[in-house]
Image 1: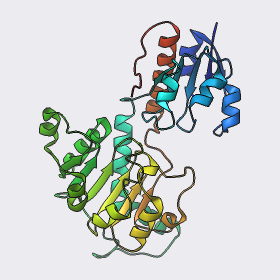
Image 2: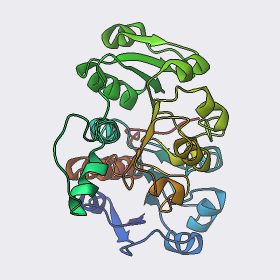
Image 3: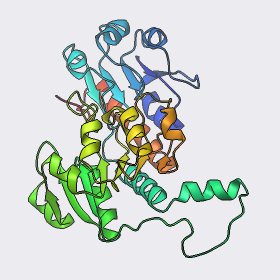
Length: 320
């Protein structure tokens, strides 16, 4: 019988899918495996359900052995996987697109509202029992109506964020490697702009592009300097897309207005400069963190593994 290794605890419904086709070994430690632990754990596996913190590369495949057929990443992003090295050895790689779109878009917009309406700052004030009283100038934030949301990467999640922004009366611009379909532009009333123009003109810049070598530190000192002094950066994609130290310095110096962050360069660590600033709303990588979404992600990964191990086509393969 085939063997499947799950590198961290997942919902039982996903494990049940795997048990129909294989012997299942779940690594139940409450932390990411080290590189050595990961390679030891996957030895002899025909399939692996991996997490976004697992490094999947040629050494991983060699450690697993020649029988390895599939690695299913429980994430939409796959920057933790050296896809050419893995698929070049005949191993199928899959991810979990689609099922986390709405949850991530909700979180992005929640963080945006938190920073623009100073919700985190307000909660900290109350919890500290600081005296306060209502007056017309008390803790003023900024509204979103009539402002421009600039989206970097108008894929599924970017489109979902745009729909929410339109409900708040925002205008939509976007940039990316290619233009969206005409029907998408029409539905969202979205205008394509070169990246430099989007950075200069948007009131909110929301990042929804994958992490690649070309997008690493896409938001750096030069990009931050190009933005409006009131601009807000939202990142629910991958942490290294933003140069975290440059962002902290720009926020502290008043060069931009704020940031809303769910992901960080060196997770779980966060640049200390960001933690000291009230114009930053932060969350510990909660974009997909609803019971429904995380369960759907794990189940999709399990179905991908089951499909490959039973000679069928994977549902959501990753190709390069």
